[in-house]
Image (tube, rainbow, N blue to C red; front, side, top):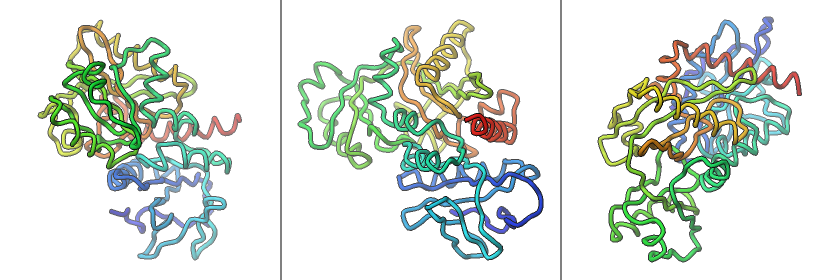
Length: 344
């Protein structure tokens, strides 16, 4: 699925002074198609009277901008594109790539090396938060509650007795570095464990085996603008199945209630925890993190630093519930990023 190039790509020699924004989408992971949909949403909602907006596809077969049925390759030396009407360089990159290489810090590191402002957190924070094990260790050090878990690489011996003793059943098996709920399984009994491990290792060569926390699940978007942390209205997730898997997330097999129906004390606890996690991880840009509330304790699950932006995604629901439009928030992200770049 590729954006309509004729409707999105202006002439780079236009005399106006609008900033040129690359919307990077695609990537190399299982989330490629979802990222293209997120990128389409950004393309649609960025204010075109203020910015020149260009879709840039990042794919295994090349990086390119497409127009009139032709692909124009991205010069990786400076992230520019040579079009028939001139060389195109960008003022800012809006990162809509879920997974590798956009969400794990690889592309942000490249853009930072070029001095090109982008919408994500710094590359090292992106790398940290993409690794679930590292993120859990980091927030746990600041006394944020997390579920007990064990980490395994594909070359490790899987100690099933230790898993039963330290984690117990039911449990969750998930890839350590993957998003969109790919490769995640709930395991209710020991006989289901091997298949769950096999599925997780299809997505990554590292996995987490985590205690299943029974409780209400919430998703919370957080953004930093002008140095201040803002928490969006909370979404409660009620999946049809046993947990928030891919089908629940993208195929409508869940209820997503925004704003969540919470007692005021519960809402404050969740909002404070979400802001605290964002703060201790020293993040920038927009994020969405998942929590389980059990017996008044908000257990942190994971955080997404390039959250889904499709029409079915949770963050756009939260933005609208906050009384804002996607255009307003996307514009604020760009303005914030450009101001930061000017100060650095």
